[in-house]
Length: 426
Image 1 (cartoon, rainbow, N blue to C red):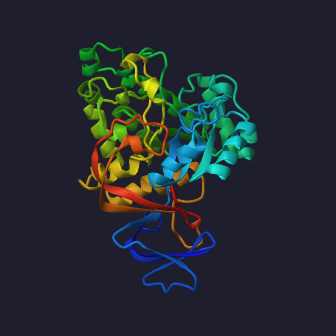
Image 2 (image 1 turned 90 degrees about the vertical axis):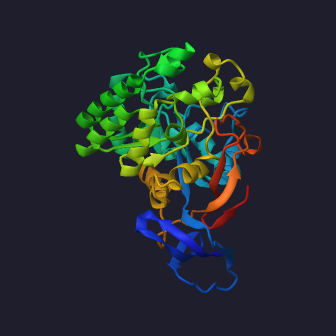
Image 3 (image 1 turned 180 degrees about the vertical axis):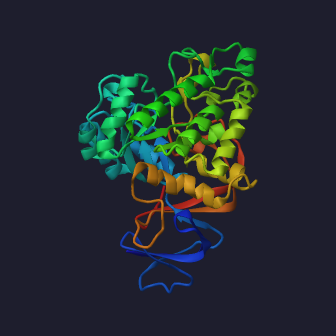
């Protein structure tokens, strides 16, 4: 199979590329990048005039819910949402039922992706059995099944000895340990960020120190024991400062932020009228935290933007704020939000956006992709900087409709995805 993508603006930070080029793909790999490539015989030709051609985007923090919670999402519906949002690959968290803490569950997820997937699926295995924070899961067994990283996401690894052993054990497999950084003893009943607006609303708060304390503890363990450590959905200015300090000290530490923490604050909880679509964990933080995250994204301190796509059934969210589950969906809004609210106003460059959505997720997870270098796997995302869209949750491919961005008008949107040179139609 031969595919020629013509006249697109190729943006590939892995090669310091930002220019109009043709991309020739043969047998699932990038064969050549050059201007005005003559189409080989029987090649499919895609006109990418006025479009950006980027390495396939990778969302490294997604909850596909299968197995066990198929009423919320499935591998099929979640990967359809991914492709619709411009992602060619996702990494799925292990808080399923049963928990992905063994090879059989890992292989089930991989099998469902092979049979029904619209994007590549990289399972993330649990750090501890049952995500109970005590006994380590069998990492080698899960790696053999296809696991690419470790996390108890949804819950922190609160036990210090368990985290220490996880960092040591994971080194044998070069796996990143992804931490949901939260001290569960600080603000255990919190439902939103602890601050002015939680006080005004009379709601129990979840202080930023709950995240900061866990990040600080973990970084000490990384310094003493080694290992690769990744902070999931980092949300506070102080946690970011701790990560910066660790990087300056040469530790193998990375972090991610979500679009909602970059664009919204705890004030939005108030102004939404306590919409449960503004309830997530970590919670929407203060404006000072938000600005620090945007600055960290611009200066390179933050490695990845990930959606933390967390679908829930509508009935679960249609309750009072304090009773609703945490989480929102994000696969179908992440790229467009970032283009409109980060790139268009000049807060970050287009190349930087591709770096945090494609290049760095592949690097952190140690998976193929994140580049259009000749000989690389031909996972490609095409998107427009000028086409407009209005977020319409009722038309999501995801089963989840729980988004605070419903109705937002955005400029910039995904257009097409290609996996190994194959056009994905959703």
